[in-house]
Image 1 (tube, helix red, strand yellow):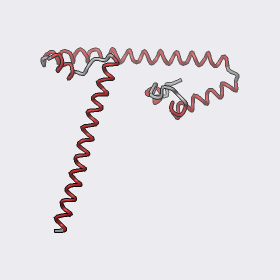
Image 2 (cartoon, helix red, strand yellow):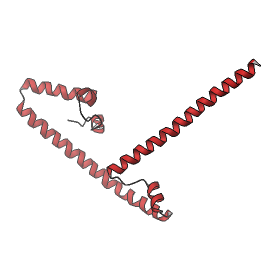
Image 3 (cartoon, helix red, strand yellow):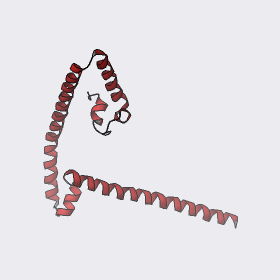
Length: 144
């Protein structure tokens, strides 16, 4: 009798745990899907191929042709992204040069220390209002 009771208690606990895991996984997928859909709608990005196929009723041929269009233009986006980052780097260097012309030698030294702290600790420790900005440049050491 005791073994049977222990078995049912253990089974109940295991089923409760499994239900929690399943609920958590599906709940997370549901919430993340809704967040991503809202973010995509606000940002003006193209919808995913799956969403386009479903909403527009695309044929397999149309889907393949659209995928080719995206692939052909992916390189253009990469080049543009690189040009933008290079231009931003140049502007940052100009700003730093202009600021340095205003500062005393002691202030320049402190400014360099501030910049180095920013690079090593990241924006959250430096009081940056936009903590997620420039993450890739910071990782590469490109933030000036």
